[in-house]
Length: 397
Image (cartoon, one colour):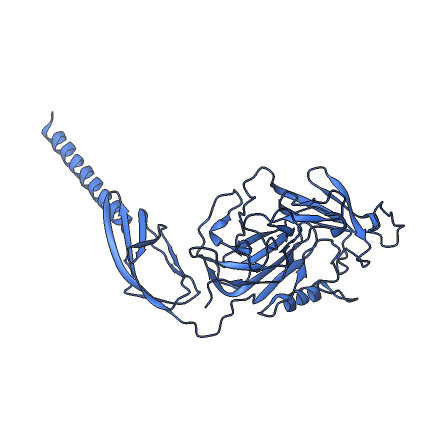
């Protein structure tokens, strides 16, 4: 081989190898192109501290040897003012680096409330308590009714609102992030109770509502572009639960001739027409106990509807004669599903799932949506309708 050609190839090979070594070294450096942790981080309690790394690898965040996260970005929240020693271990391609810091959690400068602080939306479905809880007055608009929902739910002296039949909902929030800690995190108040005459000890008047939660990731205090997650209660994964259910209610002609039923309480068995996306349709009955309109009078639309998860009917006629209907309490994860002093009225944020039914890890939640989860009429008791009478943070001291 010509010596010049040999030298050229040799130099070229060495240059290529050197470039490759530099590139590999550069790649390795990029993998750990992390400036490390600050000496300390400070955050108020009930607020989320985010510490991103923006590097690849496996991560272990720990406090006092207890692992608190394995994500590339730490989202830390504490209800307690204290100092927490923080350790981060990153492993990439067999290389390990350890960083140390501390998180100083201070008491908030203002005053927080453990109760509902804001009501963002109120859109109930049809029902026998509509226009009564809260009360509609002639000329009231949707904004007026939203204000009445706020007056009912905000603060420690909350009163009750009715969400009507399937799909009716309310959206509310807190003045701080409720942390996702071990155990159950917040309680939704309702008016459920267990009946003394019920054969099942955990049955009575239980009208389960689906609970949705959201974390204020963009920190603007509004439930706008934050993803909603459903609390996967005891019925979520059962084949009796219907996902992506939709229903439409049609505004009734209050002046039409009523069609009485065979029972004394059935004033009009063809009162409000409804149909769903499963091919079912029927009427909501007007009963003798409530004579006002069951359609929200502040709505001008000829029809309106809702979509979501539908739970199986939970009311049954225990008497067999229509005189004693009872609603069975589901095990966990729903609003107005058990008495307020019962553990089943408490919600664990770790039960939250995404739209594909996969569990998600949230640092906490700022917003809650509750909607009636059952489409059923329970004889003379009327439609199954979730009621909400407040909510509060179980971690707040």
